[in-house]
Image 1 (spheres, rainbow, N blue to C red):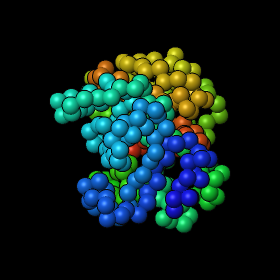
Image 2 (image 1 turned 45 degrees about the vertical axis):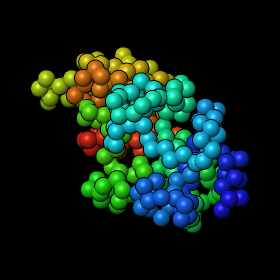
Image 3 (image 1 turned 135 degrees about the vertical axis):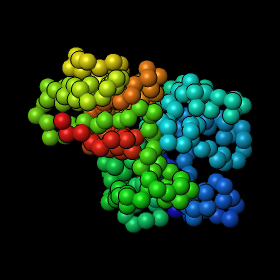
Image 4 (image 1 turned 90 degrees about the horizontal axis):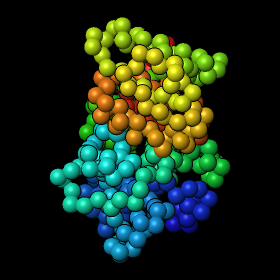
Length: 275
């Protein structure tokens, strides 16, 4: 297992969490009683320096309230945990924006519980066949400790506003994507008495979301890495604008777009809209 783990890290970006069999030295509190422990070696020099100073592995849960959008800046951490923590080590905004890819290497083929910054295509280029975890529909009813892996809960990464997702796969072009966003905003305005509509708007479509109350410039539609880096910052910003609904287009399911769709679908409190 150790050799296999090293070969993965040599060939892929380091934003990868490997689920490995836990030994007796790993306490239950670290794994919530699960038989596997998530192991990741960060690439950031500040994180590496912190581990080096500690001299032991560090158990590091997410720096946000459960279910809320993940923090990608120190300000986001303070927003969620002010008064509950002693200090923040601020080394700048998160590079990828979405969390690490979680892979169970005890399964054959390897089982990806959470798509993330390392794409399924990149994994397959190294290890061959990879299977993506399929939810059984019961995750929403389970306590976090009962889930097979962090990040698989179906009510996760959610802003306070209701998410309205607009499907874009199968569209004939960018103009149709913009039109679908306009339709979704218009429908919510008609049906929601006093609704305050926010939009995660790629730069190409900002002029299409007429009638929206708050518009976050998400980045270029074709730049999936940029969309991922700004995803949670945008959801938090629109929450701060007191949006009651957030309309967001779903990117293509390729590369890091798979992780984007995963986060957005888990954040959604309304079904996907095919406007």
